[in-house]
Amino acid sequence: MTVQKLLIAAVLGGAAAGCQSAATKPIDDVGEAQMEVEGVVEIYPGGHGLGYITLDDGKCYDLALPANVLKNSRRWDTKRVVIKGSLQFRPRIDEMMWFDIKDRKIEGFGCSEDVIYVDSIRKL
Image 1 (cartoon, rainbow, N blue to C red):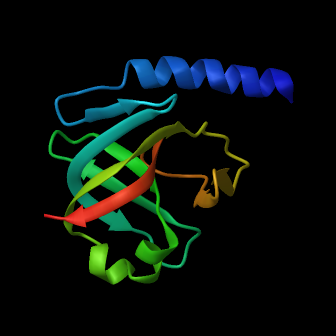
Image 2 (cartoon, rainbow, N blue to C red):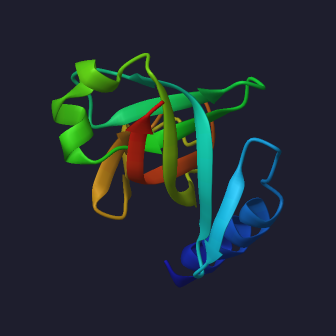
Image 3 (cartoon, rainbow, N blue to C red):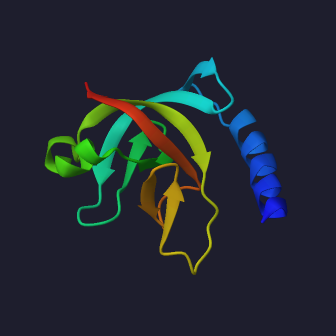
């Protein structure tokens, strides 16, 4: 288990360091890769909380959404938004139905191995 945590930490450190484009902006350096992205959000209804955002350049990030956004998913689904949060890594393992990311669960599938743990979301 400790080796697995160390491996995940090493991968997270490498993935977060190389994951910047013109569409993402680092917010601060607090030990997690903080970012801000702008694009169109889509939310899968009835799931554990998987949504994703597609940026203008086509890059996609899966989202670990807060409960208030999931409860009002119609308000957010297919809307252009700005999302701020921390970048988390989710390995793709076929047998996993969902993953815990901090205090949230997301499905084991999605558009990316990079997941944004959403701290804030606002419509444009």
